[in-house]
Length: 402
Image 1: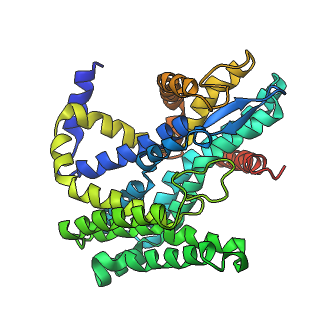
Image 2: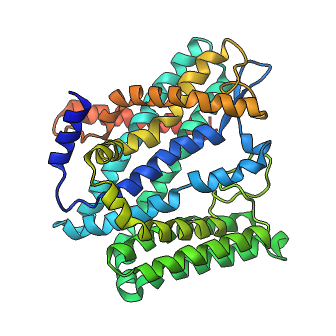
Image 3: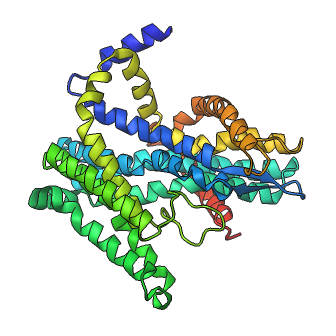
């Protein structure tokens, strides 16, 4: 089928009520995940022939603003909250049924990638891939999957988020912002030495729920353009204040060797960026919708959204598929050398099309994990149980428990 025919087919199948702008925002946030990991994450070949994680941000702090653009989880959670409201409103069954459907949709691809990697590990070890490389690769594969667990917990709170939005409107997310502010004040303030390290974990739920709650309020029609401008301006001011006065780390992703990180768990800087992103997204919704009314631009958005979990789960595997075989040949800039030179940066950019091509190739087969499983037969139950056991085994290995 030609590109023109595919575009026409997708356009014909798109319902008139489809919110193209929201789908476009989701696609943009999805593409930022692999691009961010591919650009801001590296693999360095050691003297023992094994690959280890490295980051160009450790040598080039000036590149930190790139992470402000590529860390688009604020957009992802905003759109997730908005879409959940519409989905919850359309659902005719119980809340439990609605949640089970969404859990299965997110869980199948995660189970698929972890089960496949559980089978790959002994095979790769048998052909000579060092154990350290396998641990590094496993860590990279698991790295983006934390998002799914957090997202499922937040999704389960959707009915409560809707109630908060109906009662408090645009201010429903304010208590979450206040909660993260208090925790950050305790862990970074004058009495930080007396605060237990686990306290930072209290930011995980309110930190990521913040943008989701904004999305729910948006979906309920409680956020106006005036509110959006307030989010954009207020978020930008808070972001600048945290960087200039309170000396938050500039990078939105973790940097090896840094004592503080913004994203794990989320700091107040992450919420400030989410405010900016959310305000901008809401203000630009109309323009984006007009842009995506063009079939040729809309078709890629549909394809990306249909492959959302495949992109999230398999993009690190695509990078490893290029780097691990090359590691046997030695040091190759952009793939297996330390990311500490401008040459590495240029080489990594040159390798991006290769990573994308490998992801597309892998996705042709991996997308099957996004489809509903067949039920009703004993063999199907056995396959699901086997996949679960393999996934659990891989998780134990990847998390360093074995």
